[in-house]
Image 1: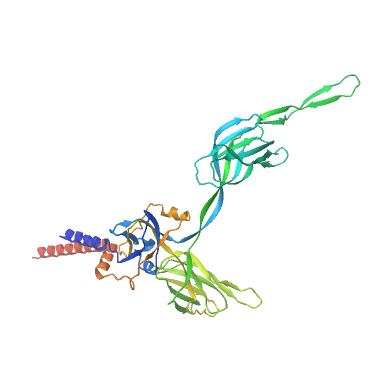
Image 2 (image 1 turned 30 degrees about the horizontal axis):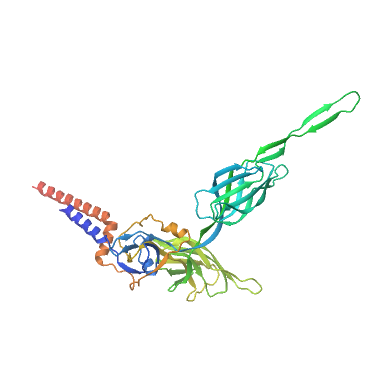
Length: 452
């Protein structure tokens, strides 16, 4: 009987917590193509009534099925041009009658190219050559693009080498290079010496150098491509004035304590702008933890507005992102008068967050959150993150209006939350109490049986 009751309670808890999303908000937007990457901005109501890491924030389609989503800080991107060298494959190679060498090469494994430079890699040293560059024309022939341009290596004398040729911007894939001489004539690096001596004639010495002909070897031909790359910049954040800050003076510790309501919005910094014009204070930022407060950030704020000196303002304290109902700021005054704050004198640095997903043509969606069950954040594998990192823009859809006030949980939900969190402890206490009762009853029965 007791086991039946236990299983019934467990089933009631699980049934009550399953699918307990308390808020449903329609997402306004439509897609005219098969798939659209959509971003929906999360607002203060979502922050105040969702779990850590937005574990209970989900996107549902019209049929109530979950749609893979990514929730991340909104970031800005800047495009930069970077040079990347593209390899080529030799397609044809022929020695010309005039002593030149014709090389036809083609780009490998790439389509998007803006070529601005040609590089001829050779293992040789101490040479002089020329290269002429051709591109295909409309008549199935070759059209002159650049040249003849010198290539050389003077490493015997100094560290001077030229292996690259600048080109007008090209988008083709096939090129023809004509090297001035397939064989490079160089002096040998040694000399033959002969000596002649006879009678009283002075000794004579002569030197003879040999001329060698060596082939001009090409290891590779590369082209410099200009890529337009999206570089991730700082996330989109803004300073928001905080209202309702409570101020307490601790005269014993000589501190000013500010309790800042943040409504569980993500916060990355606090800015303090008191009415005083000249001050310097040490600041500690604390967050609530079970049993009290924990310091997790701090620094020094100062302001110096003195005649004849540059104006100095350093009023911001930045830290790692935190979500809490309140933050506490301790300002150490020491022997200085306490700082005074007017309305808007305390601000928080809040990043913008988006829920990003792929919307299908003609489909409607809604955002749900506010599940009392402890959930793990869902992990989805899709190309949305990579899509944004490449600098692509998501379509911006709007979130429907938020309900008034905070989410209200009934007594049944609160009981189920308590049992889901502390159910095992309660069960253990009940079992121990039942065993103690049975032992007490057995002891009483034994005492009565032994009484004459």
